[in-house]
Image 1 (cartoon, helix red, strand yellow):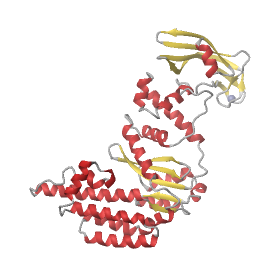
Image 2 (cartoon, helix red, strand yellow):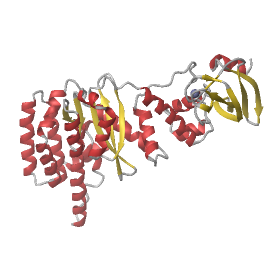
Image 3 (tube, helix red, strand yellow):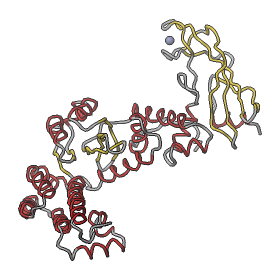
Image 4 (cartoon, protein in one colour):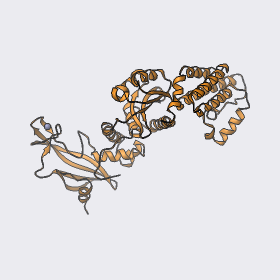
Length: 413
Ligand SMILES: [Zn+2]
């Protein structure tokens, strides 16, 4: 059986034929010719047009086979289009000036869902840039073809990027039927989120029923203005994150103070046992926590306040939860632990929005934003070479966008 037979089976064109197949060094080259009597197509308007002239031969890379790189060789024609003038023809296997065929790009992008871009490049003997281009192509197609009509619930989130010097704002759809990343923007200002709503459109924005976010003021302001019919919810994940941040601050400060005053460094290596959920602690961390709880330390008191707050989420009625919140805030204000007091103050100020959580509890599963946030962090962390914003953007859409894929006549992977 010849390679041509296989190609005709899995990658056949209506208006072009495979001609010669030969080895050139370690690569296989396949010459492609236009089928006799088939018209050339104007790339500008997609209509048939008479041939004007031929350009120099171009190479288009296809999926490698058994370790050999495969190239299609073809002399692009220019057409003399009645409407557009002299234009390059359109070919069905690649677009624009791209060196990679569409099929090969989809193939690389498929593997880039499972491996890092560098690993994909090494596995198929291509470059990181080519893998990037391939993923970009698939993402672009997906963004152009996705359906945004059924979005009723949004999650607004932020992640630190490039060693925490910059932020990205991520907007997710968090409907039960479809959770995915919808949009990414630089920074976390009002302008950032306004740009999202501009993209999303007024009609769709007014149909939103729920928007989950954290207490970040610029977000709250924009949500109120642009998603006027939606219930804005401060979700559990962001509140717990705030409490954890406060505990971390208390612990770090106290640890320094103890060392300065020449005490035993009891808080050394205690970070995770104070931040993690109890059920996730390792045996060693559990022992450390047990040990710590015997001391009368600010860090321990802060930790216990956070633990107590867990009870808040078990309420069914928003009214009772509100009473709990008031009592808890009063205790924190008396604790004299500054970072915790700061959190309590913010919570008091946002009490109605926090209590909205109980109104939406049945409609939204609480872990969605947290799950997406974790995945986003892993994506940017693992993404060797994502120093550019464009790289991070494409990788995030690829990993979290749940995007539709260009159709393929044959499944190559
Ligand atoms: Zn044309």
